[in-house]
Image 1 (cartoon, rainbow over the protein chains, first blue to last red):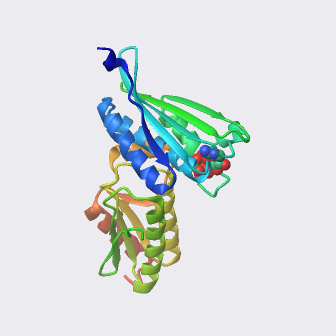
Image 2: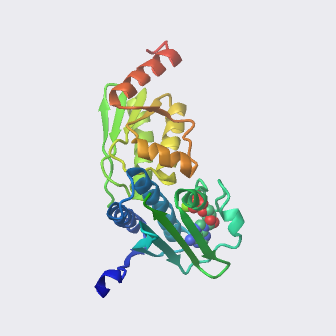
Image 3: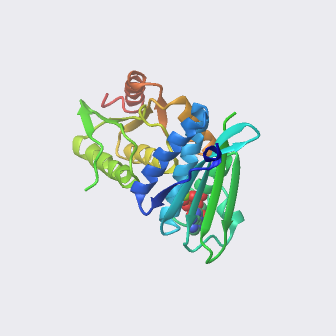
Length: 138
Length: 126
Ligand SMILES: Nc1ncnc2c1ncn2[C@@H]1O[C@H](COP(=O)(O)OP(=O)(O)O)[C@@H](O)[C@H]1O
Ligand SMILES: [Mg+2]
């Protein structure tokens, strides 16, 4: 059935901390549907929480797009966090444990990269920020 | 109007049980509320039960570490109880070690740890 291959992407507005809570809840349910283990669900939801908060706090708001993913017979969850904010001038620095410009713990980006199976950061000064992560069921 | 997490007082211990997924604002309110209540009540111990929490990210982790540090300055010990195994595994990978935070497996063990801490550190008042 052609309809089966169409991927349903769900979008959450990240315009405040209530959006971060909603994002966590949506990611949890997608992670369960994808058959992720409890530990992997927890890792993905935690990474999503960090990235969603960054979108709100540093990106000036944006959105999360979430979808089920498949590859080589494995199922997973793909998440995109996108904002049109100031962007990140020095990606290397931003991915350093403990580095923060906002008085945080500086573990959101670097931690999310460790917690996810795939991590892509597309940003630059004045370009906004797009972070994509994927977590696969084992 | 944000919801606030209730802080219960039992003797000289303040007990907080986080039951729902909290917005960041509510997390900060809890940190402030606890600091005030320690001073107002002269509490010697604080127990934060996180057994219902499905995740602890760096924001909640920082709150736990901050409450532990503030309470120590105010003469009280904080114990975080009930962290789920999946949460603990994830925290370590996130890079948060919660070094200064005393933890216990459950409420009973947490209260026992508090009693021990208070007895060793403040024998005059124990
Ligand atoms: N979406 C974003 N837009 C602009 N800057 C960002 C964004 N996400 C992260 N950053 C920058 O990267 C730094 C590190 O982020 P993070 O690792 O989450 O730590 P923290 O949130 O504790 O500062 C932030 O302090 C900020 O300067
Ligand atoms: Mg962050």
